[in-house]
Image (cartoon, rainbow, N blue to C red; front, side, top):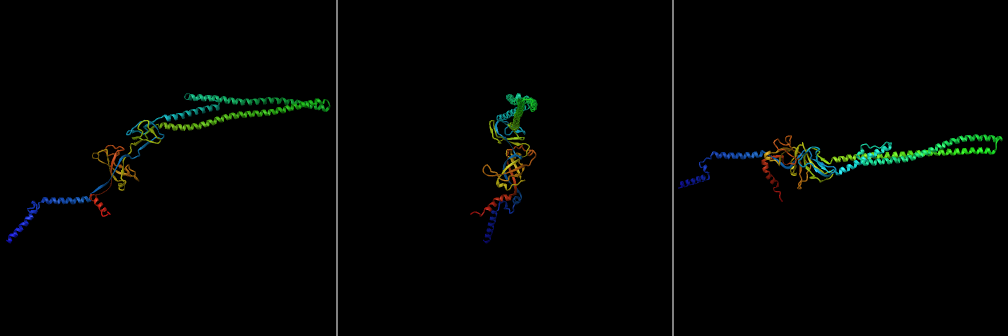
Length: 446
């Protein structure tokens, strides 16, 4: 009885053990395939943990921007402004240096320039007239008579009137001088005769005085001789006085004539000096307006591609100093100018590598362009949505064409996505980062 119960108990335990085993282990030995599988899985898990602790991935700061030339885009401005007559190029056109971009209406410039040129021609004709008046030479305008007929006629009329007036004044003064000279000549002759007569009367008076002393003549005859002598002396003195007055009158008339001639010369000389000064100023203004006339054509300062033209059609008004076009210079290296978020800027430095994706090209087909950070702005710029950003310039590390050998051509203005490598960390650290953050915030709530 006890033996039966013992066997039954041992049989039940064996039954329990056989029920708890898989069917494959009923024979009491695990198969080799299962052991190998368990070993391989365990090894793979351990290897993955080790690899995740050793292997590192890049930390990348994403930024968006566009392709721009390394040099500045040339802004074309107009100094005086005006009204557009023709727009000669459009955005996307290639232009050579000095090629016209647009033309302004010439009416205002040509009107002012023509007025200045007419004034200068008038002054030149007037100066030639004054020179002829001063020298007394015949007035000859030469070839200018054909270009300014009306002005030439006016100057010739003025010349004739001035010559006639000057001749009239000088003739009047010459007549005064001649009159005084005639009086001098008459008085000189009269004085000569009176001097001869005085000599005779003195001899007669001397003879009568001698005879009177000897009692050989009458007293009345003596007195008559003396009176005659006195009359001649008085007449001679009067003639001498009139001669002196005539000489003074002639000198005065000659001085008046010289003064009139000098005044005429001075007036014309002063006017010629004023004309010379005014002509110099007009020449400067004409040069200025000639330059302005040349600037009726707004020209490209450099060869390149037109990025934008502000006036779209004829009739548009351009303000002085307004930007009328933007030109991207050709032959300059292209770079990516990207906007970096403030939270990433502290991790970026000059020389950091970057991967550039041109959004217009498929990255799976053409790949990415390698680059490196060339410069970072010193301060932030206000963003369009209120969030500030920093500017970073990324140089494209490629061949001289600005692109990789199998990459399509790049154009300024193309949008780019840049991934700037700021560092690296292990996969384990990357996976455990949320846990680290939770530890930093754990037990800190109020």
